[in-house]
Image 1 (cartoon, rainbow, N blue to C red):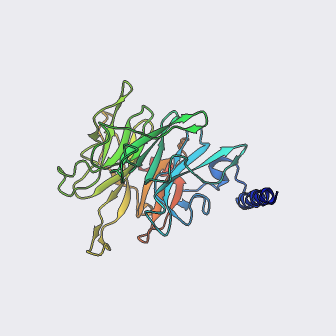
Image 2: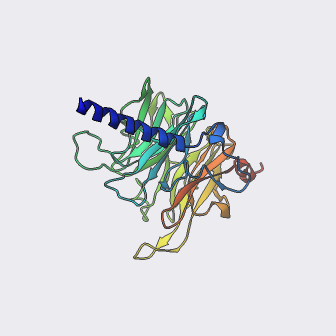
Image 3: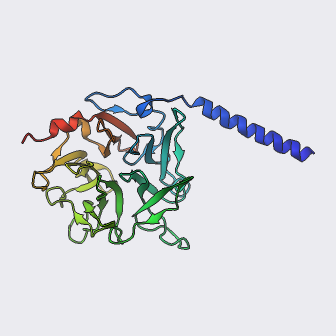
Length: 323
């Protein structure tokens, strides 16, 4: 009897704590968590909710119906063994937004960069999880995916070759036709700097083809091109270009990381990319909301602080070449 009373009290106490934590979370309704829309100058997005005391470290990915937002973060202070990079999400249901939650398939290995498929039924992400469950230790970064199922999400599946290689594959982003854009250092034996470049694997007849460099006008040997966002119709691409140089202690001595944008010519070739401007220095991980209204990205300091910012997507149209 005493054991039953003790168990009942423990359950009651736990329930009270959970309810108290939930009551502390603000009631959020409406599009974009009910946040006031930004203008033409970037503003922090959802401070204390999605932009947290931890390091947000991915693009912000939206389900096609905009009722789910997914991202990844590092726990601060960093402890790689105790707190691996983790995928998070927030969901709109019963006419209000949930608290941020960890993805059910993440939290053990280093996972990041979630990105929805065009139909919203898959989430692609990169991970260092072992390819085989009985393997010991972490793999190099590969691209994985999960399928939406009745009660949540499937077990992660490695995308395999030709997309994944013994090199790094990360930060996937998909066009409306299924073409997969991502970051990789697979050119490190061709590129003497060993830098990241942007690649695309076309989705043809239900399969991904051998990845190709997005364009020689975009990828360089003097900087690291990473974190692509591809427009649904592939008419433009936004990415991070990093030409920083460091001293022996890892301090930046010159250069910066900035957002670049490239538009296509009518024949499909990519134009030379242009800088998006001073407001987009020390930023990375761009994405655009499914309704095309807002550009999102992370802004960081060299001290590892990193939060989400958003701005009116008209900034993209202002950079579009006049033909």
